[in-house]
Image 1 (cartoon, one colour):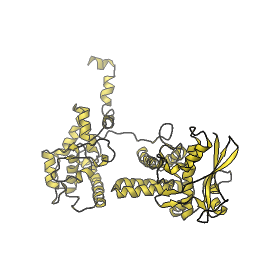
Image 2: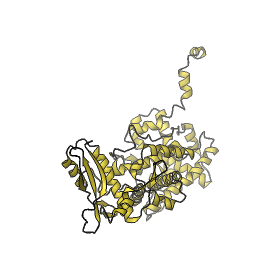
Image 3: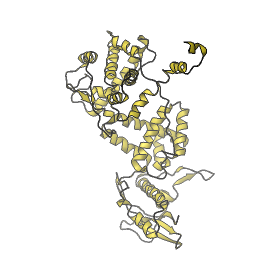
Image 4: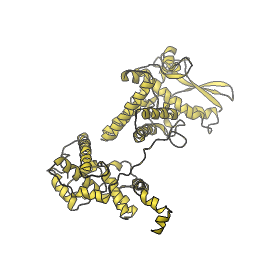
Length: 444
């Protein structure tokens, strides 16, 4: 490394605002001299942040003396700052992160190149104009955007993640109140490193959380990282970094005989009949989820999975299945408005629609459990079992994997394989028998 840097308050000359500018002091080993480079204002979602302070005392409180240390000199948090001071500290953290990247860039050979790099930060194509380094602000902004895009379920998941992160750091910091916590502990996104993620995972395990749940929270944290700067040298995920845990897959596919029990079931109990109807409609339509079912309009012959509209690179259109069973279900469940099923009403806004989807999912779960007991199924099923059951039965019947994949709305066969690779448990007796070399077996 040919240079080192510090962020300093330049008190040689005041700005028009009456404040002193904060600059980067670059020390060049080539000439053993210090060189001051101005920092351009940062433009964030909250507006323009001028990189300056009124005096040295203010600069020290914002930056120089920001770290709290224990009796061993270890950093244990940051001092409290509010309002404009907090915004300035966040802005300086962003610049500090950029400088870390700069100092590791071996392509910059001369002092002139380094100065030009710093002066033209805002003009660089790989920079995000509204970078936010504060973890809590980044989460809040993303949740706000998700709600604006009517992605309420994902927004709720993100909200659960930040609550759990808050609880984790609050306990780690021996703080008692959430209100105090988010003012005092100013976590930068770059504070979320491999050690942090491993500690967070251990904390979740102590609370009895499953790998699947921890995986959801970890992926949400990774999403926030990706929204800011995935190429950052401190990026904690990916090869050689923190590995997001995944729960062991379980076989969630019913046999054809078990599904037939559900097909043959009929009851005057409206709760159980409703559960049966929605499960089978989902089952016959490639295991479509309840949200997609409730958004169907009358006369619609095909649909796109709402879950993958934003993520799939290739548009996938799935034909709806209309047979005697699904038509009977539609006749029982259809409404007077334009929607196929009588749950979502014409005029409902996106938030109301999502609430109705969530309410039906919550309603179906205990009823499907009761139906499982009544029919003496091996497992207590949920609506999601319709998708796995569809895949399992088609695969066992010898249907081409690509055809199954298209029926599920997958754009990759690998995704479909994830639905069937748990059949080894179901086939274990046959596998053991096939690999047995006992004399009794060979004589048979």
